[in-house]
Image 1 (cartoon, rainbow, N blue to C red):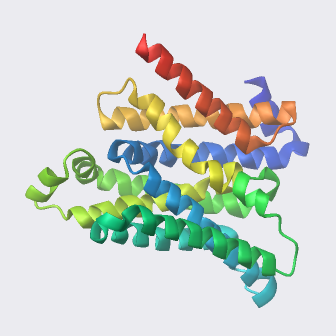
Image 2 (cartoon, helix red, strand yellow; image 1 turned 180 degrees about the horizontal axis):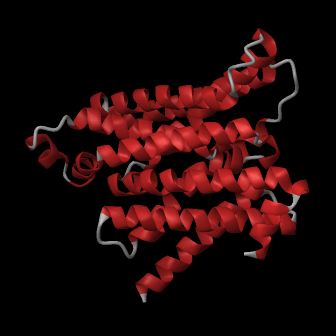
Length: 277
């Protein structure tokens, strides 16, 4: 607790304060959408969307330094690429079930390859590792405002569509019998997943963001009987991992993203062992 207060009140730790606030704000939609991803068993689809996001980040950086589009923030590029990838992944999973794995793998690879090419052609040097594994030094106040707006939108839409999305997660046929458009709801779930993934890419990186999306939800799911219980528990657990990971990484001088994911993975494995007893 004292470490958290120190980060908030020490003027020299402004970048840490931004990172901590971003982690706190993003944890609620992460727990909410992560629960849907785990319940619907679409982790591999979410992973494909996460990796395709690099294409949007790469193009945004290229547009900033080569085309002079200073307004085109990398987070906006990631959001655009994530939504496009979500649309393609949803369309493929519905219409090309037999070739789903291969086609989704192609979308995954296309986003990564395009992003790396754009980053390579960007006039100013950009370290791709910062986006793949996270770098808290890249976070700015603009990132925090964008994340807050996206988080609010995700939570609002999920709350309004909660019953319909729950029906889709647990019984798609029942959802259709109730007159719900299952395909549209499925696509909405993927788009919400894409938006949520963008929230913490700058902190934990593209490669590991899917772990933070699913592990807190998986841990909460071990003791939850209702989906909303799982969502609340996953959000609280995500907050714990983010805050703990940021503090440990700062005082131990470790990279923040890997520390957060390490804590999440170890906790999940311990939870499985305890649950199995």
